[in-house]
Image 1 (tube, rainbow, N blue to C red):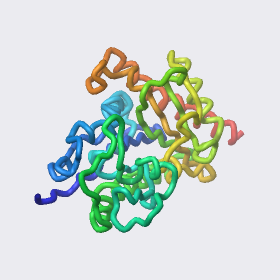
Image 2 (cartoon, rainbow, N blue to C red):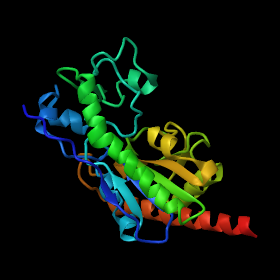
Image 3 (tube, helix red, strand yellow):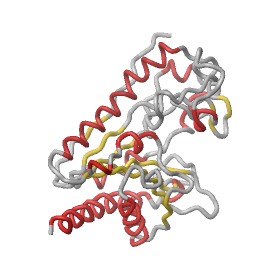
Image 4 (tube, rainbow, N blue to C red):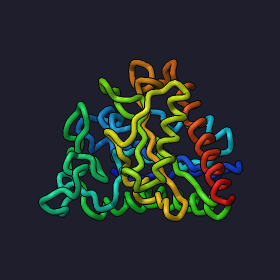
Length: 279
């Protein structure tokens, strides 16, 4: 089967004086036929890896002029929230005997090898050349776009913020929103606490770094010592999707408002911190 290229991300340049950028790495839905053909469970298995419709949750923030980088390539093809060294030998030929890192060992490397509830994803592994094509076509452009947009913001503001947007399955006892800052490594610690306060003020229960402390995106782009902060935002998908976990549910606009309020509220908090520091 002829191999069509993977699509690069959509980039919405910020149009407002708000030093915040959204990234959405796991909502891509453009599945090429060659990818589906290699899926043991068909397209449904690949779709199970998505953060469904998180890209559409960003609409209110986009309407305020906040910028965003949104992956179009599905996570099943290449995961932009993994480093290019997180390689699972179950899916990449010649990767060696051992997976690199806990996530790759669990089947969620840069090319996932397993998913719930389908188990093994692929009929056949891919070679290093195919991995490099996927990185070149989709993974690298995503990160270059995030870096460019953040640098543009940093040229105009003392402090800027990346909100990396995801969804998570519902679990008993887990908060509706989980904020990850790599335990203070990707953002100033007070910023995650302020994000949690904003979420709670909007009627959401919020947790910090448990069970999601942030992945490759916030680790790679968060540089709080340079005034570039990055927070991962995980939203309980049962709070915004219908019962089929694919279509928008009755809480969809509430979740969209949350992302808007987080972006605007945290921008105001950064501006206030700057004003205090300048006194």
